[in-house]
Image (cartoon, rainbow, N blue to C red):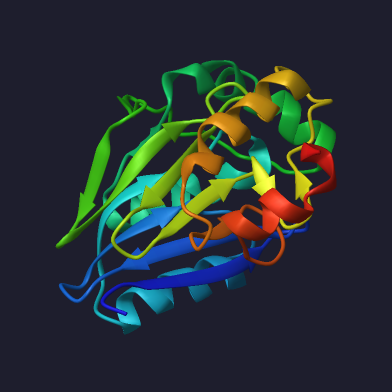
Length: 213
């Protein structure tokens, strides 16, 4: 594999943080969920210890458990958070959501760099394509790498499950459409790296996911 997908599991919600890198040493950090100093050190040590240079920091969506490490990564590596503009409600209410779930984010860096359906985000010789996939939350996106045939799915699609739709802006019909008309157009062998839990594949979920039959 020319590229590498490194997964970390952070905070009490077990969020999957991903670092995508290729042979050039450039990388993308996706959903930095590190909450404790130990988790921050683990993530930074992997990046610096492997001589990686972050080319960007992306959020699949702006739920508090997925953005709690945004400030740390941005400040450490001189980056800005990149997300879909429809995440706005969630950064405006981050303190309130954080209080409900026991996560505190002080002086949250507000996104000013926005990504949209069809954008290609480069790192070194590689890139990921943005798919807009709401339904779990407004602003939810997935990142597809066609060369290595994988998708970073955030909280849209899990192994044998889908993102919950009972939170603000969640909608089952919308997430169903996002999955079936966007993700399920990918080939069966595409690996799915979700926002929580183990990896799966497009083909497995087409056959087995109980929420989609």
